[in-house]
Image (cartoon, rainbow, N blue to C red; front, side, top):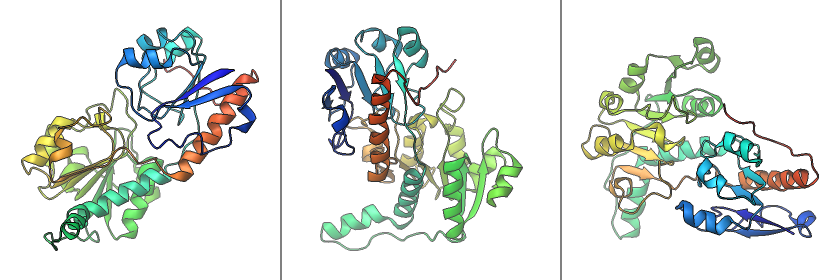
Length: 319
């Protein structure tokens, strides 16, 4: 009997989202519903497990951690890319690393939930009603406003189409973005500075890498309109988070709607929890029933394939 750990299963749904019956005679599945932040505690918790399921980048697996888990044989991440896992260390230590498929639909939809909530003061106004009050804000129409897209891949493209359906002007920039890609989607290609200057809502859709880490700087935020909103449903470290907090606190920008953070869960007392013009959600862009069912179906398939000696969805080391 092998032991399987599902990490960061906050809602305790991993064992219900798919059918584990084909594995019940071969594995014991345990869910960890809380986050384990410290390496020593994580190693102690996982030392008996041969198979570990990591939920996106919620728990990092650097070489130092992997070296202290000699029983670990199979590490599965949701999605086919996870910058919090040292893929080279997995190879060196003989740990098979597998992933799952994914969908951009849920994150694109959350992006628009955040934009609409920001534009219409939804959180404030719901709070007003619940506390016995009434309206205190004036909303912003989306039609005629400019939606800026920092990244125009599959996810950015989905967000652009919805913005156009609202009657928004759509503009975009990223390092390798081409005029052909923009023309394909009816999006205007602009220079980097102009993306920040012209956007009423600037939405980030980039993969976190060494090239994009800290890409959105204090200087970029200073270019934005004092009424503009920054929206980040990608990865927290793409932005200088201290600079974002200062820009919101000082009124340099209108506000920020953020679903991903450099440290998760977001520490108690963090300014993102307290500033009234920051709309934070707890990294729920991919947290939908359809996405979870797809992921956990494939997690079971990955375990079955591994036990059969022919692993599938193997992630190669990032050299």
